[in-house]
Length: 362
Length: 276
Image 1 (cartoon, rainbow over the protein chains, first blue to last red):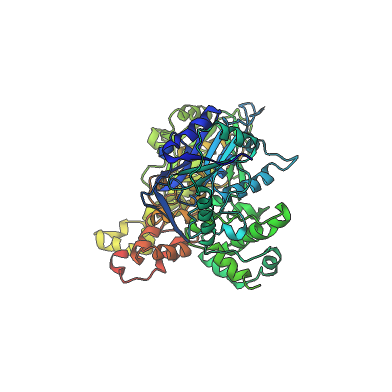
Image 2: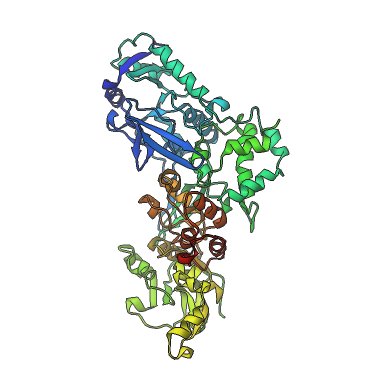
């Protein structure tokens, strides 16, 4: 693997220029409407410079510090999921005479995403396992996935809601990316993983890193792990969860839960969707797939019966699947410790706190 | 009552649907969903034969129709009689908008002494045949489909017509606004701004208009499935709203919804004076 190079912050735009020259459209995080959102990135100046995130259960706020870093925050409500698993898309159509009008998945232009975190990469691996399962590839997901290049940033400023260190998914980005940035006050230490990353690294106008930069960067990321206060209970929770389906805590959290599905929408690994028919007046029709949630009535509707009629049973379904049954399905838990479900729960329910109450004593 | 299976008899695609649009206790706004359809209005006019629609100048309320769209709540004895006649003359009855599906804004009087108001306001109160409650259409006659919204959307109306043209009722949609908001990539206003929002108990369908403008949901589209209004009220109080404000928010547009009513009336506070 080539040695990491150094990109001073004044020349941050060189990263975007190099990606564009290599044929990628560039997507990155930006401050918009009071949150951090990923979208087309025109220039490095549009990155979220000088902001931090203050998050707690049910609360997420940006705080401006003016410091000279673009990545001194952990995450916003979304990162890669909407770019790959579209919130809403047409799968096929029938024409006015009712004949199928096949629609091949449109491949977007090759896209480079800057600012991907370790939790996002871990989540991406899980989405890949689901949507790209051999023999069952989802062509719409696959079309968007194939042209994706990922520029990771190792996390140095976890939010209070983060617990990736306890799930083993961060804060250092270890696999799945093409380039990775270690951010320091004066610049980015850039390293490559894989052939595409190495070609880009060679094309970047990099300098030799200042003395001690690599050590300082590693120290910051180690501190980010140590700073995390939330931790999921240790070990595979599958057996313990399924032994405690009647734990009184499920009913207690069910009293507070709004069953709104916000947790599943912001969860980077939740993939549930529903399809509906959208008929046109001319006789044509479109089959549309949309994000859905295990918190909806439709998720457990079976010929006239809703199997999970209340918030208690829906919340329990979500967590016993996410933290329990995922082990059998995908070989690991479905939680990557990003903490989004905690921060973006309008009812301020804390997954870690609930898990401690239900399975934390073993 | 001559009611067949919804959609039966007009699935060949060639026949035009005979459609009536009726108005009851309402502001007339939902009927505009038809007239405001834009270019779709031409396709709509080709697909259906409008036989009664006062706002469009068609006056034949007694015509037998395939589909009757009904706007407005049932709040007088005259309306209670008239809705039965509408039901008898329609194969499919679709209630459109907040008033027709929950009783609407005027259901605020369900919580007050409306009879007393009439007695105090009018010299001959016996001439006012107002019912004790402003009720949704389904409280009086069988309803085949409800389209929520204050007002209902043109899209919901045209998709309903398109489905009925093929002999099917569209699937009812009671999903929560939060999912529509998240699919649109909007910032949750409760979490990112502390704005009170009814999104978690409100049906989707508006396109998350208010959250898209940084405001909390006012609940125009009425209750979603599983509306956990009590849990939401508790959270709104925790965000700093007083009891009166929580009551107003829950009752403003859909006072007739039992789940909203119960959560609102459970709010106890020292500000009772202006919260009624």
